[in-house]
Length: 187
Image (spheres, rainbow, N blue to C red):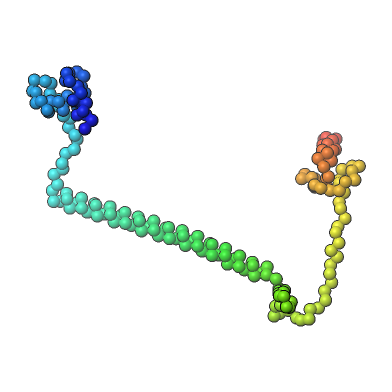
């Protein structure tokens, strides 16, 4: 051990240079009663005398603690299971909702093309041949002009406050400087 090695290194064995533990170990080896004796401190641990009644009470308390620990473990398991089941239910509900929305979004008419043929498939409730329907006018709307005075550019942005169509930051600044002047004259 390291302490024994340290004791061997101290040749003069001067008790003033040693720690209390080293002096105690040296005294045990030499059994010199002329030197100062060290007293041991009480450890604080006392063995309890157990009567049969006390032993029975301790056993009951121990058993009760074990029961409570088991009950707590069971409750935790139950809570975990409930939590997991709720998560699975919510996930399955989302899946069902997704499937129902997918069914609504599926096309009514299917086009199947192969190298040899082309096939159109219609749902059962659709009459065939199809009745002609009017095609709505799909023309492109005319471009909106910038709302700033004396600006002929097309709209790229819209003002967040007023909703006026704008083409640049410069037009935005001019419109807001005009609205601020207008507001100041109103006050």
